[in-house]
Length: 486
Image (cartoon, rainbow, N blue to C red):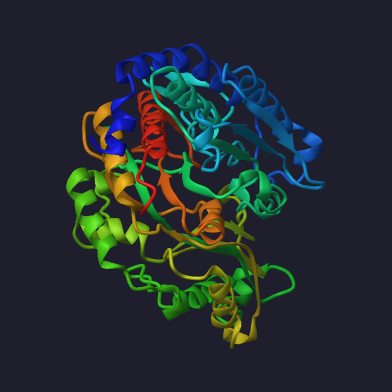
């Protein structure tokens, strides 16, 4: 029997399943029902977060639960750097002295996206409501469950026959703002973090709720506001139209430099990247596993059609190709308040998703040049790019982790694991990839079909949370006995 087989085989899988079920139903779900009503919006969406105290309230709740865990040697600390959001930092010694030189880093966050509109009448962002397998409300899935699941997985390994290396759990409060506080904590805690050989992140997605999905890449992003001003004040549209160009039309012309409006293709050459063949192969396998759910998971209006070619190409569109979204607008009055006025300016909020291997800093400069040069009609054009995050492409998967991940999925889901990139960003992964180039990564999560993180009616699929907790326990046990010579 191989070392990796001994790790997973030593575990009492049924014992772990029963234990996880008990902890989730008796403790984690009730904790999340208390956490969801806390409007602990990320600093980007709540500039007065420190005065409002909601982030501290969430930190206090999670810290208290974690301190109460019966895990020998567990140390829980809230670390605060002046002027920055806090982090919860936990250390758990390895189960054997020989494992102390090795470290697993488990990551999650507790800050949330803002309310957004469109919630069902009986739901709301700050209302925790369980309906069967789903727990609705902002932040439960993205990803308030992560601290609870991490410690439960560690406790399960210890209680049911496994061993694990030293573990460090890091829960931040700035992820939804691009994790701009996190590098300062990584620097301050470098000695205490150590050199992780495995990173487990519970902030990602899953293509379905039927098996373990491991994220192999993340797109980066550049975002900010584009403002076009043509007048100092609004004027009568009947008097001015035909002479004064619409600021909206000027903005549309500028965006046509960036995006082909008939296909959505990003025309900025620097924002495109070659897709590795290994990722193309993973996309084909993911498309086979998902079928029409590749696009069917989204809440289309009747008759709407997806972009792109076949199913594998649509997976790549979402995970490896750049794409532009307009996520907000200014200078546009509400419909009921609109009059026959040619508006002086238009502001659009841009969100440009980037391939995993494209530098966000490089694209910021390229966008400045593309959108601001030679403004049509001599309009005043400003571009404030206040959001930027590099993507991440996982290193080659070690044999032991591929075996462990697949074994965990089969043990707790009854199906093999699937590997796929994700279209969103987790800035922490890029930071860790640079700082710990030898580390292996298990990036997964509960954000599956219709879970709608960041949008209305966000929910956590509770059975998937339980199964992922069991999978993390299994991988931790396999990590502890993996071959060390590769």
